[in-house]
Length: 200
Image (cartoon, rainbow, N blue to C red; front, side, top):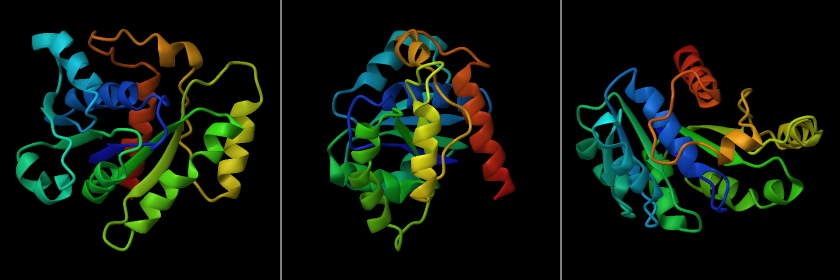
């Protein structure tokens, strides 16, 4: 799996998602996490994990990542790319590199409305590379209708949504710098992604 975690809007949980999924994949096979965000949050997280980090980290925010990925990813079973907000050229390169694109999204009308530039960017490169695209709802408040409304809205737009969700508390309190545990909510997300990859 070559997974790009992306959303041109900031504050959606991209890094948290990328690190958790890379950790889960790292327990299943040799995994490379590419931190393509100049802010470097994934890099900082991995460094804090130290020798317990279950994946290999590479910092690379180049706009030509897709041209070099075969060499960079040689020997890895899985690759996860954490992308920056607002850097179209870097995100485009990550999408061109990916077999799968996961878009973390808070279930609010504002966030859904601001999803359009990301979807348009993905669509613009589909003739060169057509990855499987899914939205992951993050920061979901319990006992509210927003998750269902978001799913209905995204469904009307023809955008697939992962069944698993990340609750609001877990999206914020994720133990930055600690090794993500196995079997958490992100584990359910990963199981779903891998199951659908095998089915495809």
